[in-house]
Length: 491
Image (cartoon, rainbow, N blue to C red; front, side, top):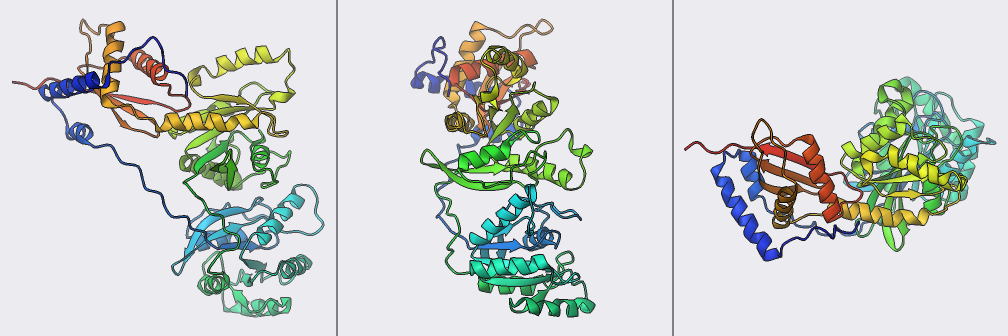
């Protein structure tokens, strides 16, 4: 957190409390609404106690491309979570979701399609599917019953046998009794009874899940415990800016598919990682394109999921390409994070590629580009080589500390009293609005409510925000200041 302003001296705590009581008592002379009274009498919310660490068994859904894996995942979850489109290769990473069936909770893993003898991005997708099998306690193997057994299906069976995991065979796209014979043909795979299912319509999924639950162990060999409530970090930015490369570098493993093709990531990918002895959950997201309504198909739903990932995170790292000027898309991503009320860190990627002579000019350009978010910590990194990525954790910690900060009501009113005395609000129509009382209504992000006798100009509110940041060190978090104009009671 930034150092407090040394020129501003706050009174002692006893003086703060006396001032708060006097100002609060003065409010009784004004017309207050029910929500005002509720705010003024609300007690601070205590900290939530720690939850016990639970490790859930892992169930992976695998199969060749376009057999309906993500549709089945959505059916199991009971909501449209995984990105689905009627063409192969939409899912690329292995993506985990918490799920439950018949009272048993487990982690459901969606995977990209497994293919034989492929190169480029398809090879990396297949590799992620193989990793998913190795890290699962049981597997649902999805086959398109209308097509029958293909050579790729046979290869996947060999892979599953080698892994030695319990397998439940799903004969998908059996929409009615006529397809039962197609499902029966899958006995030839040697994986036991094929369960005829229509993932699209929900037919037969109950029996399939019953079998899957029976296959899962009571104690997981691969589930990941999440101790001490790790902070959630969303990696966001426009397409192909290096989010997946950064996640892989932070993890020290090729966890997500990386390719020079823009838009490789479609589903948000959660990953637990320990950095400097503390657990964090990093979420890799799809690149935010120009406008959501200009996208279609998988990219449209990926954009919606990216927004949801930001809202589920506590802090967002916005990646910006240092080799090109800040774009409208970059600005929109930053605005999206601020509007969601999340803590913010800005990471300039590919900084190591910048010429030494160019860097001073680039610094000045960045200061101009980010003039509205000078409060956000900035780190210059290389996601590809890992250069300076160790600077991210201190920036994240500073931003989250500010996001969680609460100023006592006494200190806040003492601060405002000093501020108004040094720089009073300009006259409006011959009258000067007077600040009666202020309180911090909430944290995450910090939200302040000011009671006043008149409207406060936007410029004066910005002045209050700037002085709040200088005095209390709010670095890396948006601040909300709302003003409630109240009139004196009529005698």
